[in-house]
Image (cartoon, rainbow, N blue to C red; front, side, top):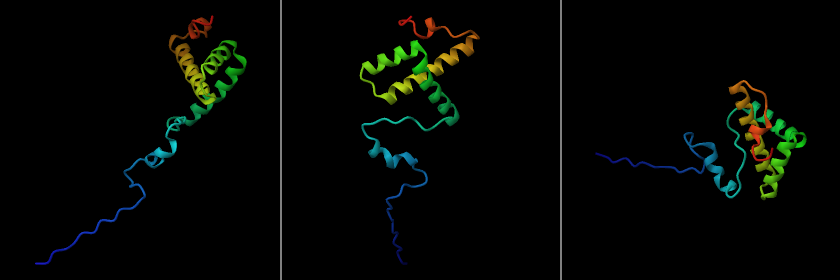
Length: 109
């Protein structure tokens, strides 16, 4: 009877079952990034709408300036505005009502 030896090779590349972001965790440490998952078209639309609303909507501009005054980075403020817009859009759609700044910004108005 002969004994066969098994050789295991360890490669630095992640296996196909490992998520692709696992190798990038060390590079992102300490700094968050905007999530790239989900619907790209919707994210792009909310991004452009957030830029426009931060410039032209007085309530959104005031709210964004308050976030900036609290020391939030620009990208964090922009993503917060995108999220706020998504909530406003969903609320208007769900209740079949018009946009009301008193509901979206209760403390500011």
